[in-house]
Image 1 (cartoon, helix red, strand yellow):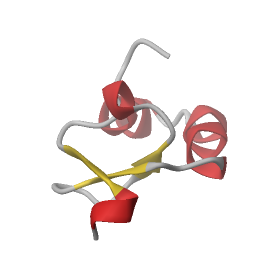
Image 2: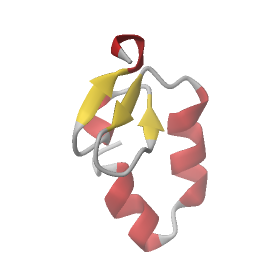
Image 3: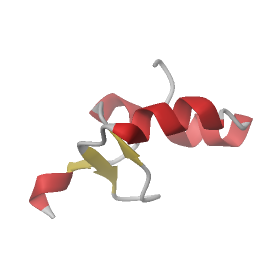
Length: 50
């Protein structure tokens, strides 16, 4: 995945967002989206730190 989930959401790419959220290890501090890869988020924080 080359774009952040924020950019994908603006384009309506919900399938890609759902795939990224299935095995989430990170959460975005700005928007709350979750993803397995930190590069998919604007401001990622590891879930285990919360």
